[in-house]
Image (cartoon, rainbow, N blue to C red; front, side, top):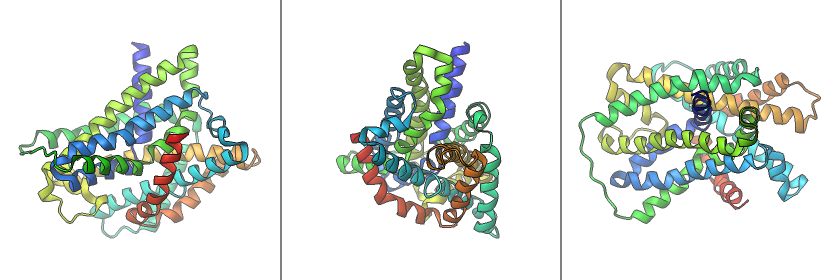
Length: 345
């Protein structure tokens, strides 16, 4: 039972690390744009947003969670350049600002007078406070934040799936729809993140399992994969069957409008909780990884972890003042190149 709970809570933590802004927005957008073919699109999306990232995570266990050794295969200097570029893309210039921008869009829908500058400053402060104790991050994610995240997510999916509706599955243009989902999975950034999340989880798996790290990582990945698959396919399906209520809605507001339709007056508050928890859990993990990389690799331990975390979040603050759509548009062409190169490696 103890081992089962360890695998479960660690799988929860991995799920919450992956499940950020892109994971909340793009499956919903995909379901809305593919209509009756949403499950086909969801299958394609799941390959690049679940299977490939988790294979990357398990593969990193062969390198003992050391992403420096993994990227050193292309050469020491090129490897360091790649790590810096990908982490910068993931953290202060991409994923974390996108998380803040999505959370702001949800708050702004309910509180129209809220300014993005003040909100971004407050968000960066909260992330700093929760990330400053790096050693307790996995416990915080797996035992506290993720169960709350799953509770709110389960409520929205449960009500949406059991609400009376009609659905007609279409296989028309199946190949094109599958490709749309496949390339849409790049936008989650999860393959990039998986290569670095291993640095947080490997010591925990090693301490618990000693010689069973690979086996434990597969089981932890399976827990995360099941949760992600249920969420993505559920989101694609929900936007399909409730599409009449979502026309003309910007992608970052689809979930909050959908939940208000399904759950009534309290739907917006429930979704706000979900978005905040999802984005916060991802931002905490990524902030910790990038700050530790700055401390060890770029500043050669001349600066403390706290100062490096502050630098990370100061950069994040300025990028976060862009809209979610603006950040996504900036990332899209870069991700197509990065994903294919990393899959090849």
